[in-house]
Image 1 (cartoon, helix red, strand yellow):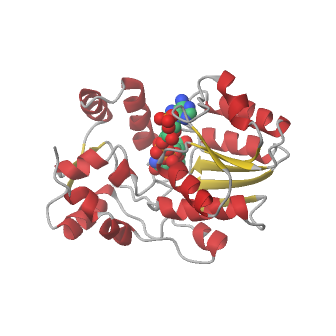
Image 2 (tube, helix red, strand yellow):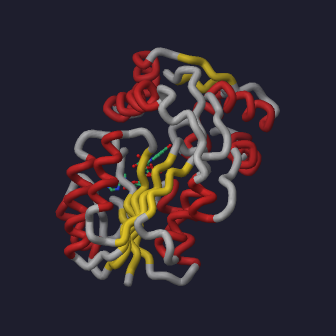
Length: 272
Ligand SMILES: NC(=O)c1ccc[n+]([C@@H]2O[C@H](COP(=O)([O-])OP(=O)(O)OC[C@H]3O[C@@H](n4cnc5c(N)ncnc54)[C@H](OP(=O)(O)O)[C@@H]3O)[C@@H](O)[C@H]2O)c1
């Protein structure tokens, strides 16, 4: 009766695994550093991770929009269902046709499914590839003046835990966004006000972004993938808020200002 949490050390998976554990449920983290290890790039690792598992939180790495993701998710889903998995909760991305192909695979799997189709995470600024930018005071991205309804990962966690542990979420596709549209310039302004120091947004070309990221140690393929997300996905297609968090949980989504205040210590910490 174990719940397998893929990406179990990542932004969403780590929190979901902690919450399920604190509810007294048997949890197995699925990632390369877990025991047994789970690697999307090594299908030989999948069977052991699925042993005795009845429900899975599926978060793909690096991104459902990247080449190869659909084939991996399809093969994993088929294996999971053959092994007795009866519930699948998929972390997906908004406005990404490639991600929607993986969603279909989960929906047609024969297991009870819930899809969490999410907008950009607020925690990209505090725990991921935009943390360094906020610390340096300059967010330099190839992003147009297009607003995005940034979503607090804590909201995803609440919905995922509900879907994994409660009735009433099977067969539901929740489109999850934050409650407010913000451009990257707006984000910089909000962070400046909360941190009491200037954080600015500078628009750069995709080529400038990729070379700077590679110079800072990001592998070229990953940098180019991110560049693609900025230029192709942030084109206005997702510039609307939804009521998905309320639909799933009966309460509104968390606001960026609350997230920023709660995480101010991360950006104020001395660097070394
Ligand atoms: N960031 C956003 O704004 C956003 C928005 C919508 C959707 N998403 C989706 O969110 C997903 C990522 O979830 P997240 O942000 O919670 O994770 P994350 O913080 O990016 O962490 C990645 C997780 O995946 C594991 N991992 C890395 N390489 C792996 C591999 N080859 N095989 C298996 N596991 C691997 C890592 O653990 P190990 O190092 O131990 O392997 C870690 O647990 C992506 O599919 C992305 O498309 C993100």
